[in-house]
Structure formats: structure tokens, C-alpha cells
Length: 226
Image (cartoon, rainbow, N blue to C red):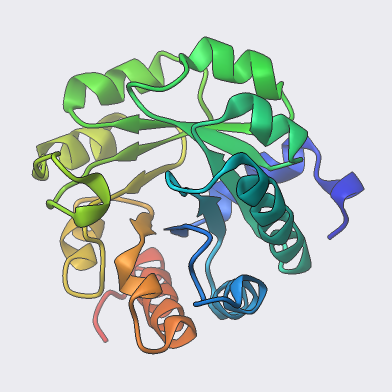
């Protein structure tokens, strides 16, 4: 897939088919970021988000190039966290913003109609807020406490059930999602999950992605059992 083929329609169609959303920083792969991304994308990750709160500007620019190139090699989506203007400059497929980040209207203005805008929600009311706003997808969580969201308590599953009942666009569940916890939210109707440590801290990240992707395919087909 070439960059020229990545129209807004293509990105939204790819988003609609996405089930496994990986969020990671520049340290993923232990010094071999490109190799790590190639392995996990080949194994079945649909979206990769660059989220690195400790990296400097130059590091993020260089890292974004690696993420974008890997996503293009595997027909996956590359999303940048929390930096709408940088997402457009880096030719990312989209940007993801949280409740305390740039307002959605500003994020959309920065990236335009042909790139994706994602939005974090932490309650049923915020799910409704997302559905009334100009975002292409939203995330619900963290369902369980997780070190990647320090200081934020788990929100439980009520917002997941609410999202399953009212969602009119793609959405994903966050918060310690792994093989042992994902089936609960998938049974409630969640179409996809966001993973971090289940992949980045796995002995074999590609094998972890393959296992998670296979599980998501089984749920999608209506056959959740192993």
C-alpha cells in the first residue's frame, strides 16, 4: 500500500476492519524498533500508536518515520498520540487525543478530513460525548488499573456495556487487555481491544499478537471457544 493510496476512505475502511490496536513507545523492540513493528504487524496487529511521553522532539520525528514506514509495509494504520499538528506533519494516518489533550474540534482542524481522529473515554457519559463529536473512533477504559495509566483507577465494565449498546462507529477497550481479560469485554460486545504490555513485555511479541489476533477472529466469527 503506498502513501498515495491512503485516502480518507481507505483509512476509515481499514479502521472499520481493525480489531487489535497496539500502543507502544520508541523503546519497543529493545533497540530494533523497525524489526519489532514488522513482526507484530505481520502477526496481525491492525493499528500501531506511537505514545512516548519521555521522548524528545527529534526522537519522535525519527520514530514516527519508522512507525509510518512499517504501517505502510503491512497495510496497517499508524496513529500518533496527543499531537494533532505533528500527526499531520508526520503523515500519520491519524491522531488520538484524551480528555485533557487538544479538543476534538482542534484535532480535526489540524489533521483534516482524510486522517483519523480517536478519542479516549472513561465513563458512559464520555462515550455519549464521543458519539456526539467529530471523531472516527473512541476508546473505553481503562477497565482494569494499568501502569501505563498511572494514577487512574479502573473504570469497570459498565461503560463497555453502554458503548456496546449505543456505538455507531469503531471503538476499542483499554486497560490491561490480554488473553485472560479480553474475553470478558468481547462477550459484552466490544469489537476490539488496545494492548500494551501484553505484547511489549511478552517473551515473543509476534506470538502474543498472533494469539490475540486469533482470539479476536474467533469472537468476530461467533465462535469464542478455543
